[in-house]
Image 1 (cartoon, rainbow, N blue to C red):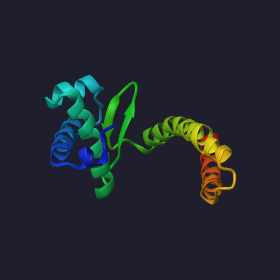
Image 2: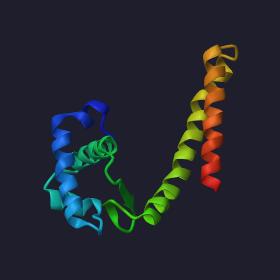
Image 3: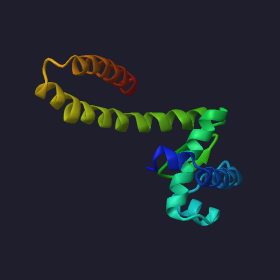
Amino acid sequence: MPGASRRRGDAAKRHADTLRFVLFEARPAGLLFHQLTRASGLSDSRVRAGLACLRDIIAENGWPPRIWTRADGYRLGAEPVALQAYERSVLPGKLTEFRRFLTGTVALHAAAHPGDKWVKHIIAQLNSIESTLDLVVSS
């Protein structure tokens, strides 16, 4: 994924605008990555940078979200049922990623420096986040 500076640069914003136009034209259907690349005329790396920037732009402006599904690819402004299905499909992966960070980094830090005030604080906070994510995923 592009760094924040590349995601927010003028080029990424232009690519995001191009992708928004292409996805808007394809609505309500979605476009797979190769279709999006072909329809936009952008390279793979420019499409990736544009998609990352587009997510930020959508959030800033309060526009309908962009989602991705294996069957339909990238879509703009999905119905509530599709949005909930997307969220339910993403959350388990994020929970796994989060747990791996806890066990593979934070827990090892805590074992190496058991008296560190910072690590005690972050473990307490991250365990709370893990618990909340687990509740959301299991519901």
